[in-house]
Amino acid sequence: MAERVEHSNNPIEILKAKSQMGAAYPKRCMSDSDWTDFERKCMVRALEVAQQGVGQVSPNPPVGCVLARDGEIIAEGWHDHLGDLHAEQAAIADAEARGVATQGATAFVTLEPCNHHGRTPPCTEALLWAGINRVVIAAEDVNPTVRGGGIACLKRAGIEVAQGLLEAEAREQMRAFMHWCERRRPIVILKAALDCNGNVDSTEGDPARFTSEESLDKVHQLRRECDAVLVGVNTVIRDDPKLTVRRVDLGKGHQPLRVVLDRRLRTPVNSEMVVDEEETLVLHCEGEGTSLECETILMPPLFSSSDEGVDLVQLLDLLGDREIQRLLVEGGPDVWARFLSDDLVDEAYIFHSNIDLGKGLRGGITSKILEDAGLIISSSDVVGVDRLEHWKRA
Ligand code: AOF
Ligand code: ZN
Image 1: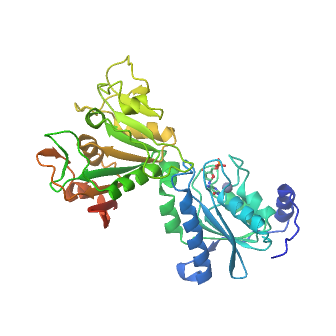
Image 2: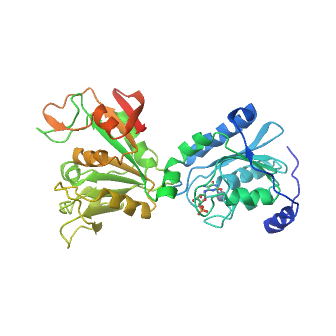
């Protein structure tokens, strides 16, 4: 077992001492080929462990950290759930738990370490306390309370800082967080399931489930990764959905906020989403008094006569103010059409089933419509007996 190295546990003293050590290291702008295979391996692992925070840490980003010394990974950690240790602190705790000294190690972290007291103390202090002497960062933090401050603090303390290793991959993993920090709005993910004719529902009988069990699991996984799930009032009336995460483990995350676009306040008072214990928000443009036992907000209408005629940009601003970073738009066709025609969709998951629903309600989603909305197909996979297309903003 490696010997524990003694070091002062007063981070402020260390900070002061190190800041008197002279000029900070210059920023190292590395090109892709400058990184060693081992450095890449460390950051790949940091990205891998960060993935465990997806759907658990919002409104924080998923972040991973690996500590390495002498060509060996000695500890790793990730931001596991909201309010828990940040990745750097978790990695240091992991080293402690293994009885491994952190002195002189390099930290590979997918996001610039924070330098503020939030739900946890600053990671910069933890790194200094642990005696880390080099920090390799994938992406700078765009959070205005951090932006560059963590890097500057480390440099002032005499720590060597290098950045940009697997930056695109890290930014992709933290996309919703970055988007929200910059625009204060959620990214919009559209989900639709279509039968072999492009229909979403039969017009002749009760609503029927037509996608495979595996596709349903995927939908619940998507919900787990989103902060809110949105439908139009017609879907509520016809399907009476719960829209909760059930088929996959919710972990330490929370159920997404259910949002209903309901221009004329037609949501039935006994709808599942209204009467269950989870949160639902009904947005309407008409009808002031309501007996719905959930939150309702009166919004200015857009010049639309459809049942879902709420101003979508205002809606995204409102959800952004509530720290919603990923919004899943689940249906139905009118709602999809509105988000797509306003170019507000950032990603789409389209499930194609072989089943023929017979005479049905058109989904109104075609490759041409998705392309016209600025999306390109990024993958097409078999899920159970269905085909799942993933579209992304070009
Ligand atoms: C890090 N390491 O693992 C994460 C960071 O309020 P708090 O304390 O939870 O801080 C949240 C902010 O810290 C978050 O908005 C983002 O800027 C940064 N997240 N920083 O050094 C981490 N998750
Ligand atoms: Zn931190």
